[in-house]
Image (cartoon, rainbow over all chains, first blue to last red; front, side, top):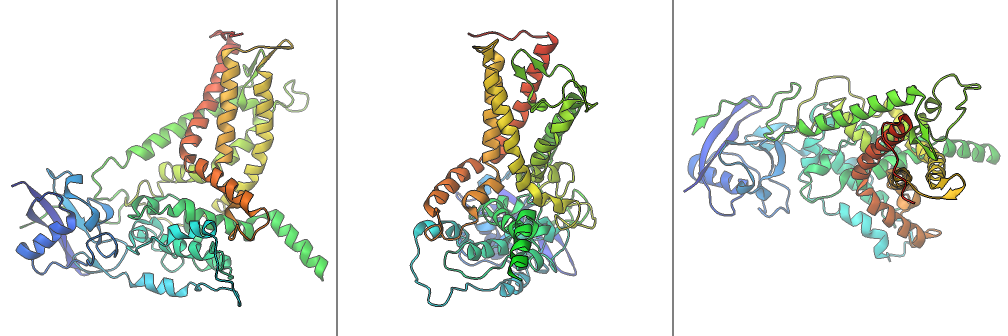
Length: 246
Length: 251
């Protein structure tokens, strides 16, 4: 039976090293199956976070051969099994053990985003055309692969100043919602730090739900920030309006 | 079970566990943009061989003060700022050169050199936010280029066409498509609307937004095609003007 060798990172925050495991390859096998085989036969103490094994829960994120991916959606036959396959935890988040990282920072960021705020007495009818755009953003499964690969968080550690692509997706869904009555544009610029994004599109490349994060969420939000803060014509018009009113 | 000789991913520049040729794309982009920049700079400052018959090189359009009455340098220097600014601040090209030249990042999940990263929050990169003004300005250039393309079919007052006439026409068509597929255009025609069914002209804006979106999905391809074709058009006009090649008159 054909075998694959997986170099799985083993360790904690204090340190660790990749350990090689030989796993028999079965038809249709995904990396998460291989990790389960290792847990079941070779290393019962291997820490792996997973839940649905169907690409819906976003729990099994890791870096396979250096690329952030869901291990449950990465088939072994899509990888060169003649070479060792590396499986490492997401680099951006603090390591707990082996492949499990602490992603709780994301939930703290999420709490800071003002929730959906309809105006009082809203008529709860929406045209499908009005919600089409926002529906794409609802596909997000919060796997945080986009946060992991984003170099602003991964390499520059701007967690204090920058919310990351996942939350621009969420806030774009709110800003573009036809019944929402709150502007979050100032917060997107100042608190969420959209200016740190230099639109290099890695978030879009790794999204397992194929959400066009950069083109459909981040750039439209950047344009809305420009509308409000960097458009000299709008700025002059506002000045005139203000001076006319006083 | 054996410990692998590899070590955990470090923070050093270029550190990655990726096995693919991740460096190929930034290298190709650096070569492509670099060659264009060198060619365009040389041609812009050359100030010769930019017109032949009814053809005018797109680098010199609109043609201002070709007789040097008040402008001592090449006429192209007067006009190149517009297209250059539009391309430099373009959302696609930003991605391309941030990766290829700034290596920020060179590729996804590849380590970067440490520096005081400010993204587009500080001068000078905060100026990328003026992209929409270059978008407005680009229409001045498009009008001029369309005029040149139509003029390319008029030979001594009569309708006619050479190979160059069609090259000029394809060039301006590609540049128009590039301009209309721009992200700022997409925002302005309807991207800034939250409720199409409530907004004035909402239906028309939604329809327009969808059309621009379908173009915008190919913005990268259009950006490269139009970039190389504009250089090719200039090269064609230059070689024709120099007498190196002969323009084939079709009718």
